[in-house]
Image 1 (cartoon, rainbow, N blue to C red):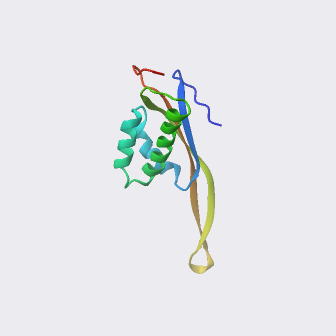
Image 2: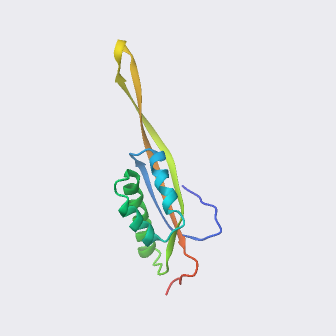
Image 3: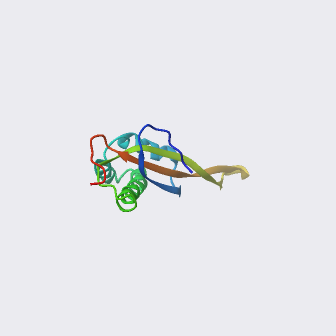
Length: 126
């Protein structure tokens, strides 16, 4: 589904589709975690619980980390190499306004994809 072109080998990925949050709100949090080690990212996201997008990202990063440990049996240190936030569907609703008018309300959804790669200098498959 998602293809990431990079010089690093992607070890693990996790995708959460149709999350009920605007892509703009999640992208604000992504700037703080990209390129950092996974353990540090999970700590940062747990501290940002008041930011709604951090909760969604925490679940996806944790899932990608668990995939790497269980499915790939990766023993080294991982980092968040890429995070893709795409817009999913938009639910359209209308709110009644004065003089018989209708005001559109757009409820946006997001697709969140997290890709993990090996951190430089870590040991692989011990």
